[in-house]
Length: 502
Image 1 (tube, one colour):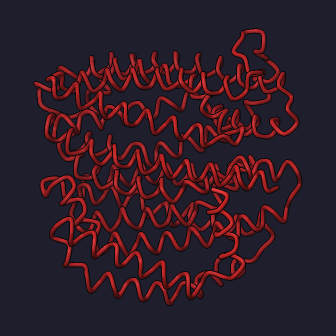
Image 2 (tube, rainbow, N blue to C red):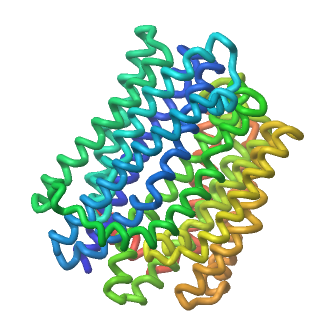
């Protein structure tokens, strides 16, 4: 057990290191893009990336299924079975990538993609070459991702995360170089494709070094296993469809209704929101293979303890994000990317609310996916996705970018939000009061203190120094109040042990 805790802590440490590196790269990239490309051309690149996202649905949920099956098989060290899972998934995803490329080419031929990317006639001529180059990178990445997911399944998230960090730095440097040399959006797409391919090869090398028994060979492909993976894969496919419709098409709605130039402000704020969501999701995602293994071992008590800690972490993070972003979020964007891409206050507050709801759902979502008990949830989330798409398209014509944000928030709260919180407690055999109520009471005082601090300092953020002092002080006040008022002695001991092991 101690070895598993040590590995989990090492994985979380590596994941947070990578989160810092990738966040820095992402934040540096935005002003670089805006400087060399301008708002419209940068908006076109963001929209093209959004076009690629739905194409990943052709994988039919096989990446998640293969990760879960590898995690369940690893404790018994049945390498022949693990090789069958790896090779079957790789073969299927290769065929799925080819099918996705054919779909994209058909949409290009019909002019559907061009109509979704409303831009000036000069930029319109670059849509096809840029999309084709980016599509090549996507096609390479789809089958090669199984090697990265295998490292996660074997609880070597640390190796995976360090690889992601290196690739993020390389991507930023190459992207800046091609922009500085004047190759524009074509050069950006080329770098994207090369990094996608190189990343897959690197993860394959790391996997075979960490686990020499793993092989990539046609003899391990199994039709029977393919059929076995298809059943849970369909459920994950439904989740993927829903995820794309909820999170992946907002950019296309904005570019299709208003044009790519209107996309940058929304996408810049969304990048900040998604970065914060990624930071808080790290301990949940990193623990997914551990949850799978605990369930395979029948360790229900371990699952309950992990879920209880996860709910408290999620609630604390959502409160902190709500306070920090409400008081200092727009000031950060103005200092980081400039006033020209600053979203209006209403839209930004709606995006903040979306972040908080998503964070609160994370413990239950992680439990459902890691234990492959997602079929009921998939029915709810597909309803949310359809409602999201319809409302976002309708309200985009009425209220512009704000309507797109509201079209995401309202279904997210009304449909999947309540379901996820309730089902998480039922799966662990606890009541809502046991899972959430006591944490809400414990965090009430820290929340009030942090909110008062942020409100008093909200206008003291006109420079980077002022912003750092104001937001940093609010953060320290909340963490200190939580430590004194809500963290139990047992939790303090567990956190101290985790830091020593990390």
